[in-house]
Length: 571
Image (cartoon, rainbow, N blue to C red; front, side, top):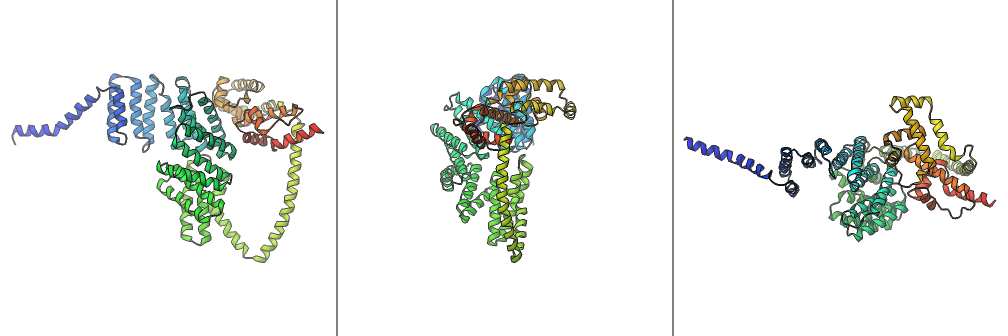
């Protein structure tokens, strides 16, 4: 081989590298916007996107522009969201680092928010909320629109992942009031306005407040129709179908769900397709059509096996399938769905922070099967069983009569206690403060680095807040109150928890209920008062919320209290 031939071979081998080097150099001469646009034009091709992200970041480093470095790392982070969340978080930390040096309208707020979303997926809820709050603080100063976007994400996390539905409802109400002041049918605000309405509807549905759910579903559907948002038209239709199942209007439920399902399948909204089949199954259960119920619950299972993802709301069909195949004697399918349920139950217990005792009791299928098997064996002893059931029936009827009398007496006693309390209701908050400042509590506070001076100062400010009746404002939140009292939410929450002996929501609701009772006692005529009007007047989001808070405080319904109080006016 001659030297000339060797040189030609070397040039042929090295030419692609020279070409790539030249290409990179040429790309770095492009504007940032052009590089950014090219990155998103090749979406779906991770290799090409990575190359454009590299060009963007190298250009920003060469020019030493902090906010551009932040954007470059953000382009890297996007590529790893789905498959490598921890790697995405590391890139987002770099975004935060550089955007703090040179912040803009979106960074570092968006980086904090997206990091929080990844932490939610990793089930690190406390760390996620910390990052959401950091995003709030930044956005409140730099981009008020994005501030409310962050609060929407917080609402979703609290309601769907943590079970803190009432707190989420409060956030959605604040967002709703904000968007009502904007062009809420315009291109930007219409999406977030309808998203907020859906959050309100979904929270009321979780709280079994069916009338409020219907109100927001209808409102959301109207807005989606006006703005031609097909996606939300389908979602509000499905959500109302699910709500009608809770109302036991099964025919109406089938009508709504069947209207939404074809569209959801068409746009490949798999999560809501699964929800549709689940609520179709429940509707057919309600109508007594076992075969169609089973068919739809099997579709839910089929989608779970593909997606390997399901939320606690949709696992109830497995109990039905297990029992159905047990009754038909199909042991193979009974075992199949029992095994799948146990697999899902294990995942849910690990991933969801808020699985309540009621949910565990309802879906503890192995335990239920064991109980039923024991019952079947006991029924074989017909003579003794018949005698026992007769005795149980008689005792049960007598017990029920006695229990009803006892409840009536208890309600009357509670009404009297409210009407003539040993300690006036207005003084409750003061008594709570006195009772909660014990020596042990103070020692615990010192251990947790919250000084007595801070505690006393916050208690004094809370007393002013109570006297000024600030709790009646229906958009009050722990974040807003912390700002008013010139403190942070951690200190405020700690003082309310330890000194008042309750959560922030319980504290606000109790103050509102106390104020409502005082006003009712002061009125000579009560016929103009309704639960709904009282709820509005004293800052509650719905009549159901007011009734629940009143019952939690006094263990009687507000309607009973008003009725008995009216009797005393006439006597």
